[in-house]
Image (cartoon, rainbow, N blue to C red; front, side, top):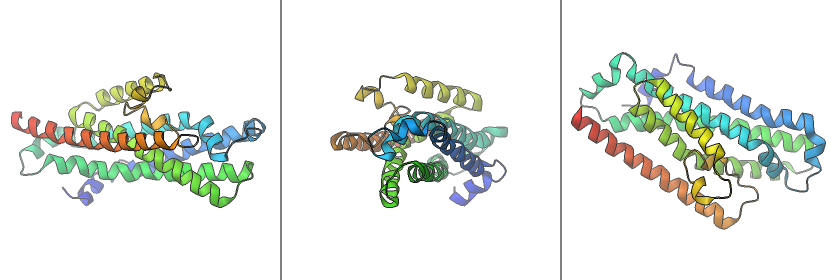
Length: 241
C-alpha cells in the first residue's frame, strides 16, 4: 500500500486542513493569554519559552491529543466504511503496510501543528519578552521537538485502537477518556507520566538533563513496543479472520 494511495484516500476528508486549523486554534491560546495577562507573566523571572509553556501547554496539548485521536479515527473509518478493510484482507496485501502508511500521514500532520505552535510561542516571546530571536527560535524548536517525540506513543496507540474499532465513535470515546484520565494523573509521578497520553503533558524548559533522557528513552521504547504489538495483533487477526 503506497503512501500516495493513502494520501489520495484523504482527498475529500479535509484531513490536513483540519490539522492546520487545529494548530492555529492551539497557537491562538498563548497569544490571547498574553494579550490579556501580559503584566502577570512578564513579571516572572524565567526564560520566555518556559513561562509560556508552563502557563499554556496543558491546554495546547489537550487540543493536540484530541485532534490526533480524531485524525486516527478518520484514517481507519475510511477503511471500515462499506467493509473496505474486510475486502482488503482477501487480497495479498500486508495490513502492516496499511497501518504504517497511515502513521506516515499522521506524523507530518501533527508536525504541522507543532510548527504552527512553535511560531506562536516565538511570536509571544518576541512581542512581550526581551529575548533575542535566536534564543527564542532555538528554545521553541527544542521544546516542541521534545513534545513531538513524547507524543509519538499516543499517536501509535491511537492508530492501534482505531485499527481494532470498526465503529469510529468507539475509538473516539476511548481516546477522549484516555486524554482526560491522563490530565488527572499525578504530575510528580514518573511512572504515571509514562502513560502514552500523559507523556505529552511534560515540558522541556526547567527539566533536568537526566529526566529529559529518561523521557526520550521511554518515548522511543513505547513507540517501538506499540508498533511491534500492532504487528502481532494484525497477524493474529488475519489468522482468525
